[in-house]
Length: 218
Image (cartoon, rainbow, N blue to C red; front, side):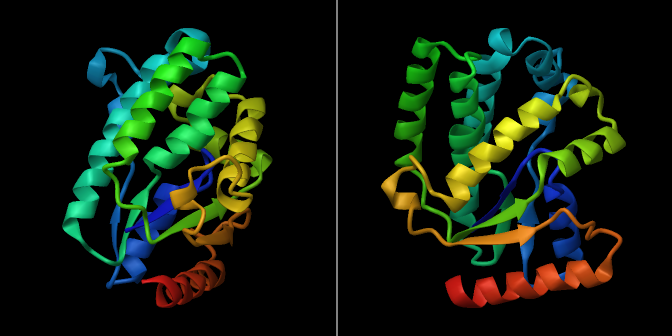
């Protein structure tokens, strides 16, 4: 199992849909956004978080933790070597929840509780074969978010994207303050400021890099 990571608006879902179309030997699993983006619980938890982060951060982070651990366990049971999953329990912790704690969206107690659950649940996880990091500047990501115009993202700010972007850099490129078991997991960084959905040359370049990454790590 491989995991594609990147900031909000990096193009992860678009990338995986294109990989599904162009690489017949690869299967993909998209992020279950409806669990926190739609009215599945009578309200959009993502919208609530962007409007009142201190009130809703712990609720949102524990829900995404639960959903992603279920997804990870299901995926590792499939035992498909060329399977790419969108986002993970790891970026949920090292990027989103950690950022929430550092910006006082989570209290000290909430952060400690979250970390205890994360530590316990990840002992059941087989580490991925590799991470595929779609590296995108926050400004480009912000423009893409505005263009797609999702209701749940109306209150999302450029400042927040910059925070999450920095956390992805620390997690995937610097491998700073992450668990030892992840430090040797290889990372393929794809530069994704250029549009690849409508630029076939750019897409084929990404596919070529991905194919080489599979040869080196599968």
